[in-house]
Length: 278
Image (tube, rainbow, N blue to C red; front, side, top):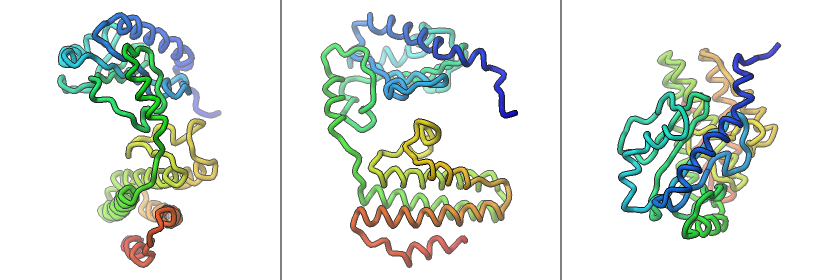
């Protein structure tokens, strides 16, 4: 028998709990004349929510009111449900992360109009309020954007991979295996980013695993299987063997990206860097 959660009954009700909080948010903010726009990102914006989806809330307020809304961000969140705790500690940050007693989380960001510009990240949003049609225009312009691989993007990607690769070896030699395994995790993320760049999809911000696994992933089945195979325990032999396997895939992806940019992949230079630790 596989894993069975102790909270199945609660979890089955999470979509209903989320709807209730969404209703409270919209009742509050739609009737606020200082709120110029209200929209959702994340899985709500993508229209692919499941039981465990958060509420990624974005609120655009009048410029002269932004300080007031930032100061009162926690009080506002408490009006939408029973908050168990908040994550952030900086009272001057423009966001708050509220965790409610029904196991729903709300990430609420406050902006002024000049903060919002067309971007790839704004292609999948759900607009709830848009008093002057600003968000509709930004959404239209965002949809015209496409991800383009760049030389700078490639350079940042591969040098970060090299750094995590070398650091994993150092931590193994120091017997700091948890640190080494964190480096392995970053190497996996680097490969995923490379796969996404190959197909012209904007990778997540580094460190964010959202939608890389499961049904919402853009990865093919063989890629997800390969990721699963790169598993290891706190064992130096296992860690270094996984590094060898990851390095093999990195070389393939690196070759592909260099070809797309029509630049020399410099295999001797690449081999020198990789072979310093394996």
